[in-house]
Image (cartoon, rainbow, N blue to C red; front, side, top):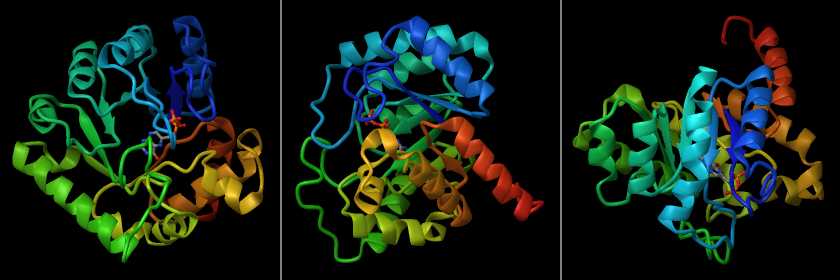
Length: 257
Ligand code: HH2
């Protein structure tokens, strides 16, 4: 899954693809590099990010989704707002990537009426303050319990089991130790397809000492580890390098991919 943030303030690609022309060019490049899905986001959810209005998010995301329609690649929209989900589904997206796991009022019912898949992500707290003091007694148990509950809610609303993806939410209200425990235990979530988003995140900076623009090697390593631990989808900024690494993994582990 290639990340395409159409925001001024995303932590690694903010401000780079704000115009539809730039976003389209970036999308074409990621497809050429081997992306299977493009994830379009109009709200930064980096730690400390301020929320944007629904209208602002729609104004950022919808023209890009429309422009990407002819590209014939599955499209995902990264949003937690029911209104943005609804407008994106009307344009035609294949996946709703929701960092709030369909907790917004009306979101489960909306998805039940559509054929799009949904990614249910765990987070503790809200982006503006989630990294201030993340606290768990057992992070893996708690994240697994939360995701199981959100899957139940999605199923109860009428969303088909074959349309559900889960995500432990690396960096969303988690310390480095929490993130590493989740990465080691990804198999715990594997009754459902697991999405892992580690690309360029600050946990990789904590481990390597590298600033965000120099986390390519760490991101590729993390994506490989996530796949080895059971991830079905890796959400990445650097598609070409990740694709090459996964080809090596697939060759070694022939037949698995
Ligand atoms: N991470 C980010 C955004 N959306 N969605 C899922 N399912 N999983 C993730 O780990 C995830 C996500 C944050 O990364 P990014 O989009 O690069 O930055 P920003 O939130 O600043 O736009």
